[in-house]
Length: 90
Image 1 (cartoon, helix red, strand yellow):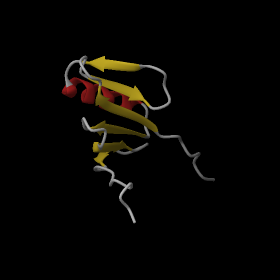
Image 2 (cartoon, rainbow, N blue to C red):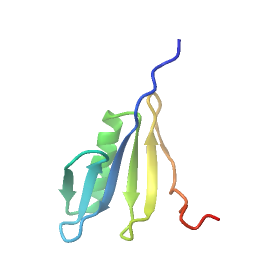
Image 3 (spheres, rainbow, N blue to C red):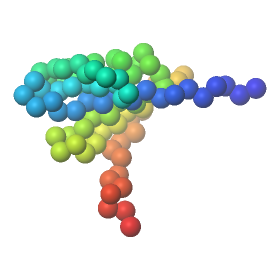
């Protein structure tokens, strides 16, 4: 018997203009705003730990992915790295 496949939660940290940074759970209607980027990233990591399996994705100001971490269902956390830009792929 195989284990059920769990949907992965994705938490995105992105610039929010003047207020600072926002953390959004992909698919949710609302975001949480933070003045400081480190606070937003820390909050996203805390959410991801509680919602395994999950990802934390941090966007740079130009909306490119700066970094991504994966929280596996039964293991620790690992850095998944930035996702290569597919728009330039031949």
